[in-house]
Image (cartoon, helix red, strand yellow):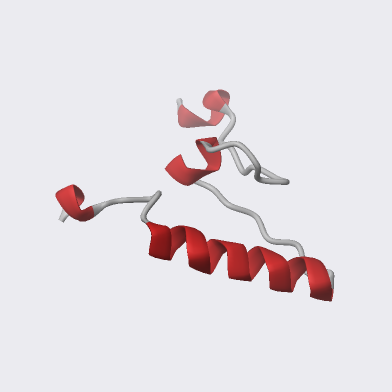
Length: 54
């Protein structure tokens, strides 16, 4: 299924935009981790300290 992974698919962007609009309106923090966190425009990123991987 890896070939179906499209993080920039319009439907994915649409739902993320809706989530961000709601969280900002309601004052609820939303964080993203993983590969999509590399895209610019997110307010907060979750990252692993490389020292924790050893």
